[in-house]
Length: 238
Image 1 (cartoon, rainbow, N blue to C red):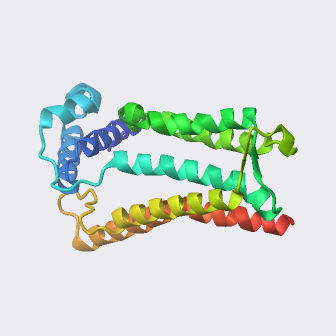
Image 2 (cartoon, one colour; image 1 turned 90 degrees about the vertical axis):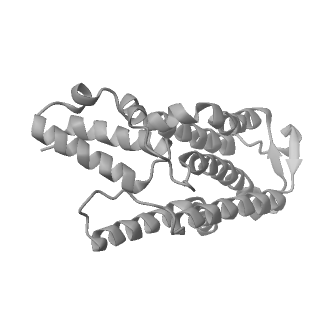
Image 3 (cartoon, one colour; image 1 turned 90 degrees about the horizontal axis):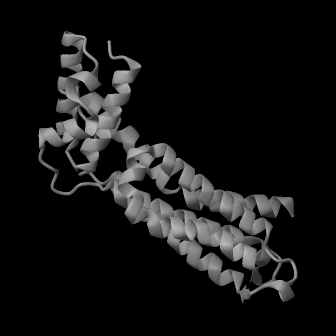
């Protein structure tokens, strides 16, 4: 039996191998070997193999020719967040037939997610190895966007900048759809390889790939769907 502690170690090893662009089949073979050793020896994974990062490095497994990058997925998600927040700022003034006014505090709050996305390339490795930090970062971005909408100046005389909300809606919508199409392409790409342990049946492999693609497509269209729901909610309230 694999303990929860060992399973956490294995999950971290999978991430480390994915960051090294190891194929799904290669990862599956490695995980099967690790599980077999742990079952036979009764040792803890950390004691037997060291840290997941050290063990992944020691394996020196070859990379797949055309990997689906986790980095690209996270960066696209960051762009999607910015586009959705811009959409959320513009929707109310557009429905009311007014200009989108941006105040000082609002601009400061909107700068938080913008800076976060700009810093993603520098922090990406750390964020991918610590998903709670990634979740916290996206949470801060969404919260900043919400407060930015709340603090929007009601009097245009107090606004630092006036923008046509229709332009913001068009640009943000195009960005969200473009990000979603790219994500869908990755999810449906036949070269996407799921993790396959030895002796898995073809039916199981096909089922796992189908499930992975469905989840990938749903995640890819998360921001446009949220934008449509946000628009529908505003119209319903009115």
